[in-house]
Amino acid sequence: MARRNVLASCLFLFGLISLSFLLGAAVIFFDLPYSSFLRRAFYGGVSWYEQREASPPAEEQLPPPTVGQIDKADKTCDGFTLLLYGEGTAAVLVNMRGQVVHRWYVPYSKIWPDQPASDRKQDEKVYYADAHLYPNGDLLVVMEGPADWRKRSFGYGLAKLDKDSHVLWKLNDNYHHGIDVGEDGVIYAICSEVLTKMPQGLEYIPTPCIIDVVDVISLEGKQSKRIRLLEAFRDSPYAPLLCMLERGKLYGQASPPAPPGVVTTPPFYDEQRRRDVLHMNTVKVLSRALAPKFPLFKAGQLLISPRQLDAIAVLDPDSNKVVWAARGPWRAQHDPVFLENGHLLLFDNMGSPHGSRVLEYDPQTQAFPWWYPGANGVPFYTRLRGMAQRLPNGNTLIVNSDGGETFEVTPDQEVVWSCSCGHVELKRARRYLPEHLPFLGRDQRARP
Image (cartoon, rainbow, N blue to C red; front, side):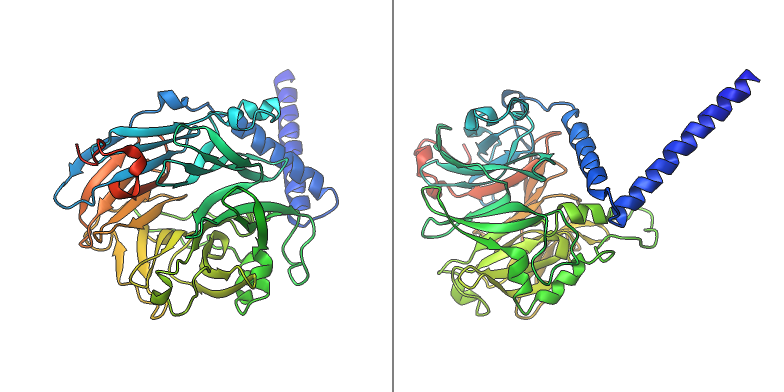
């Protein structure tokens, strides 16, 4: 009898918990009364879980990058590669042998010593998401870290360091993902805001939510302009793309089972859409030198990448409007860049059933003159991040972020160089020619 009573009590408790969970989910999904309270509790739970994750190694404990078995010196574009790890505010510059020739490191708590004690403890969890390296060794960095659901953002600020890692200036705002620097030194950075009320015409997007903006910042680190991207789409001929944000229309929802060996795309559910409406991950300025190659665009316009729309677009910072946009076979794309041949290069995370890929795209003909891995390359997959850089000799440097590696491939899709960061996620890697980095001195060689 006693055992039966215990079993009955357990079943009753399980049923009560299950019913409470279902009722809570329904309240949040249908925006019923008390939904905001439950949503804040959910965010708090997420934040608590992330905070209890095992701490990554400190900067001095990070494994040194190692060049893999592939290093075909006669086919590579030799230079120095800047590596940004996913653990700790460290950036390293390595030669073609994988040897560290320069390092930048300053703990997050030293950049922002006036932050709350709880934030100062996150030195090992904050990392550089992107960086711009100047010829004199100055490094402009974007910092990200665990999502702080009090601010509803994972952006931890923007800072400029000198070659000795001294902070020259800093901006404490929700900067994240990408930055770019124009020919005149003006900085373009992605930042996020929290909206509790949508602008006119966008009321179908649930609030509160995160929206992205592009900040225009001076050489001295002063914000001069802020461009709100939802309105930039809304007020343009490309406004219909925003229908992707309507409830139930995000990519990655229910689909037929994938064949054996095929990578499946995890869904982005409505709650993620609420937390991060556009998820802008790239901003690149079109230079005066490249502008003649792109008759559809003008010098000074910005190439942007709203991941949630599966679209790439060009933003005019003078009119604050999107002047061109395209969707294609890519999904959850990252890092579109202008190429010297008038094409665009972008990292396609989820558009291929066999993994990730790099696409070269002609915005005029909508053709794809080149892609990797294509028919001859080595398949790879990274759900998040990833980037690609076209090198001066025609090779392409590719970053497999989840795999913690970067590798160089030829136009014929042959891998001629690789570098691994071990178990550490690799956020970014970018190759610089020796003549572009005079601060290293003549004694430093890309291939000693």
